[in-house]
Length: 390
Image (tube, helix red, strand yellow):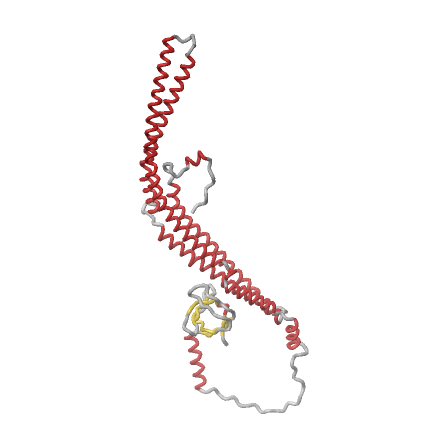
């Protein structure tokens, strides 16, 4: 879960080695660090969700600001439709980014939180049960090894001390040999001290080698027990890595708009609208609506025709209209899709441009309505993707 460490000098590497007493703590702490990493992942992408929501709001505000200005602009025909398509595309993209925001929070964030709760079991007085189990296992496996290392260190220091003493005795003997300032008795005593120091050195060497042999014989058992606990820790870490990989892939799937069919449809329609700009069609429209092509009621003789008497509406016609209005109020309002929409979540409707269905709930503060298709399927859809059927 953590970054790879930098290379260390050999002497530091030995001190930092996993096999040295207490150095298993880094592996034990990995559990708590993984728990905190999950918190950071959730916080990170909740912030990204806010970015998506703000972007969706800004797109919608931009579109709403410019719609009346564009509609009132002096442009007309295919050129006006192209400009308007930029705004309608922004509305559709706003819905998409709003959906991304919901996915990051309600799907990805909740998924990590649920897995975190199921994987990390907190103890009553702090810490996690998993960390405590690894700590206990490593400490139990390392306790006999630490005692043997301590005994070996003591034997080594004793041997080195005896070696220094023997070396000093040899140096004194070499200095006294042939020196007229030293009496024969003094030289003899120095020689005896040297022999005793050498004997003590060999004795301590034997003890040192014996303890080292004992430590060497115990090493395989120590390694086996430590690796057994370490492998359990690695398996837990493997599961964490695997889960977070899938969580990151899910986040990537929600953020990757390049493969989103709704986005492709938005830009495909926008490109089609832009390519449909036609100078000839627009000029012809202007000619027929504001130029010589306009129909004109040229002067001609008009005969006088008596006006027809208006008939009162019958009772049955009024009742039928009231029944129709009452049905619309109870059963929903008929709407027609302006654009294709592919539902991003299981609770959303998908539809094609031109398809009709019922709106059964009014628009909420997020810009979503609830509708029901002819087959009875209900779901949410973006309010600005439809128009009322007149």
